[in-house]
Each structure stands twice: as structure tokens, then as C-alpha cells.
Length: 195
Image (tube, rainbow, N blue to C red; front, side, top):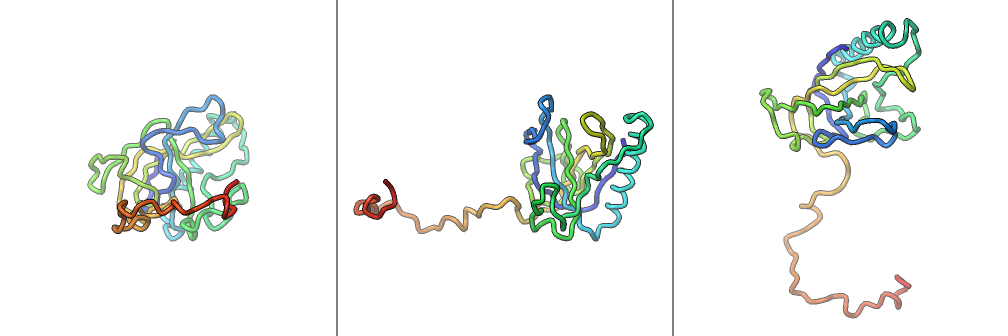
């Protein structure tokens, strides 16, 4: 296992409060805490550290997991400018970035800029953080190297990801329920809407 801490990255698909099973999880899988890291391609220091951690975990796997064999494994770090394995594109927030998913069966420790514990519910998709990971080899149905989620240092709030609209934009201050029922004269069937 090799530990690595990222530079400032953007968080997406944040699952720090309650662990979840991924849709493609094996029947005996345990729910996990997880996050997708969006790493700017300009952050060469973080990428070098991640690639070195992947390589070290691979070498460990050759000796400890794969019986001396050197299987071909895919990197868990993906190009946000290229389509996913499924052929679907990554979201626009991933443009010009590398993408990495990390998870753990243990909840990550979450701290603020001053390394003081903070409420995990305050960290949302779109926020910026530094993330402590560990890379390790695995075997089973497939052989590979992946990253475990250890800790998160919240840096700053970011534009929320995940769609939807702001409640401030959706509802104005002008609502009043004193106007009566505006639907009295509306006939669904007559307008061909229902029926």
C-alpha cells in the first residue's frame, strides 16, 4: 500500500455520510464511502505522485497478489476529455482534467483548512479539497490497482455539481394563496390533456 496526498482537486459524487453499494457491485460487496476526484491536467505534481503510487502498488501486486505474474491492468485514472468505458462523455466539469474514483468501507476523516475535524455533511460535490489516498493491488474476478479513500481536507466551496436549480431561483417572494382557485374553469378533457 502506498499513501499519496493530492494537491487541490474538485470533488464530485461525494458520498461521505452514508456508505452505498455501486450499481455494478458484486453480491457480497460491502457499501462504501466514495468520491470522484477531478484533477486539473496542469497539476503535474499530483499526477506524478499518483502514477508513482500506481506503479508501486502494481509492483506489490506482482509479488503479493498475482504469484509473480505481471498482468495487464488498466489505470483507474481516466482522461476527462475522453469518453468513459461505456462510451458516454464525462460531464463538462471534467474537461481539461484527470478523473479518479476512490472509495473505502471506512468513513474518511474530514478536516478543514486548519486540519480541524468538520461536519462531513458540509462537503458537497463541486467543492475543492486535498485528498489522502492509498493505492493497492487487488485480485479476484479481475486483477488491478485502485485507490482507497483515507482523508479529505476541505479547501473551499465550489459551484455545486449535480444539476437542479437553486430554490432562490425557483421560488419568488410574490407567492400568495389568497388568490382563490385558478383552476375552476379548466377542463382537462376538453383541452385534450387527459382522458
